[in-house]
Image 1: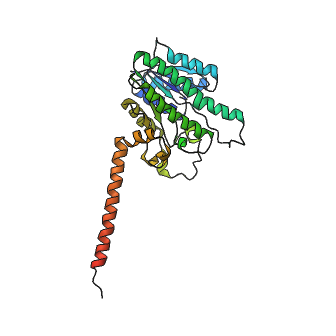
Image 2: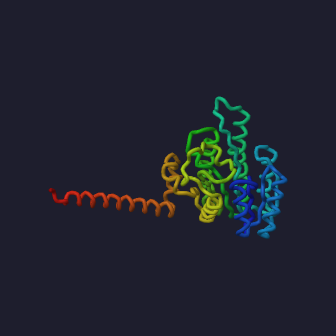
Image 3: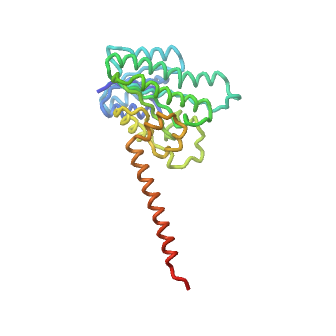
Amino acid sequence: MTLALVTGSTSGLGLEFAWQLAGSGHDLVLVARNEDRLAAVAAQIEAVSGTRVSILPADISVQADVERVARRLLDPVDPIGLLVNNTGHSVRASFLEGEIEEFLEEVDFDVRATLILAHAAATAMTRKGAGAILNVSSMAGFTATNLSAAAKSWVVIFTEYLAQELEGTGVSATVLIPGFVHTESHHNAAVNMEGAPRVTWLKAPFVVQHALKDVAAGQVVSVPSLAYNPEALGRATPGVLRRAFQSEAIAHAMSKARMRKVERAAARRSMFDRLLRKPRD
């Protein structure tokens, strides 16, 4: 099975990716900044799954650490076949009130690290003609709420561009766009979730399972829930919209929605017909 490298792998979606990948027989390289927690997670996964799990402690906001992870991705001796680029950080302060250091750290996490690691992975994978890159974004990327949302938007557009660059190489690029997920993850922090309806909340196992299925299918855009379509995607790029609405699941749901609309219209016509035919006193 493919060797997968997962960043942000000790919590949230990153941890769920690690468990599901190990459960399907993938060996792992786990990356996170907390070495003790990283070692504990690796030991648990190895004990349960029997897969080989190595750790690479790294703070993705630190240039030297990002370069170490990039070197691991470029290693031809024990090549990485799947990169789960789950780096992320969220700053909710307004642009005028926040500290510039906070904003630069956001850029380091969501833009700089994503770019560097994707470049390293794409370089190594195209040399052998196989591999996959999964960049994790957020539905917040389709809002104009704060700098975190802007950074997530960049991840979406960048992945679309990367997918075009990789066409014909045997390497794919996918961007995961989850909504509100029941985790401690940074993906929730870019937006205010107070009052969000229950239907918009997703469970991490479902999100990860859907994303890995889309990666295997070579999908460029992975949107795990129809609860976020089409309004949330209404501000996406034409390519995102085209790929999202071409998916079989969304086409089926839209067909069902059209049928319900037709049925409601027919019911209303039937009611009016009965009223018109009703004899007057």
